[in-house]
Each structure stands twice: as structure tokens, then as C-alpha cells.
Amino acid sequence: MKTAGMLMWIIGVALFGYAALFFDPSVDAYGLSGRVANLALLQQQELIAMAGAALFLAGIIFHAASDLAEALKPAAPVTTVAASPLTSDILPTAVARDETSDAELMAQHGITTEGGQYVFGQYRYDRLADAVAYAKRAAEAR
Image (cartoon, rainbow, N blue to C red; front, side):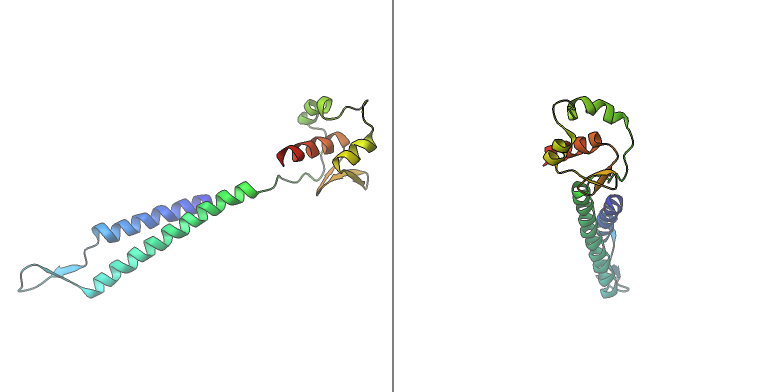
């Protein structure tokens, strides 16, 4: 959507610039000196300028909307998490197994179990360490 928005406002600026700077709505006045404005060409120039302005505004709105959508986009859900390289790095600091029991960790972070998996929010994890690590990251992001 961002690329489409950029393309739209660039084309809009080009169309408006063409209508304003290069489009000639006048015609030769046969037998008279100089040129006279042709109403049909003036109308065409106005339509090109309005189309360019509309494309420009729509492109700016699309571009801004895509930036807003990216900012509001939630993290990708992880349905089932197997052991990952990140888990081994986080595990020693994220879960102190000897200090806190599993039940206390789950209560502390709002993690429940369902069908043999650990559930935090809308996400499911096979390992408690992964669920706790994500819960801590979510808490830090707030």
C-alpha cells in the first residue's frame, strides 16, 4: 500500500504540473492577431489538474495509512513454538527455575495451560520458558 500511495502522489504531481505548466488551452485566431482561449481545452486542462490533485491526495492518504498500519500491526502470532536459538539465550535470565516454581511464574505473568500447551494472550507455547519470555517482552513494550 505504501508503494501504491507513493506512485499515486507522484503521478498526481506530474499530472497537475503538466496541466498547470505545459497544457496550452489556446488556439490560433485565424485572421486575428494572437491566440484565443478555447473553452473545451480549458475544461480539459481543469479536469487534468483536478485528477492530478485527487491522485496526489489519495496517494498521501494511502502512504500515511500504510505507515499507521505498520505501527499498529501486532506481532506475528506463534501458534506452536519449538526450541529456538532465542530461547537458549533468554532462558538463563528469563526463567530462574530454582527461585520460582512453574505455578508461581504462570500466575505472575498471566499464563494458563490448555491442552498441554502454555497460553499467553492469543498465543500458545510448548515450553513455559518461551511463554514467560514473551510475556516479559510484552510487559516491557507496554
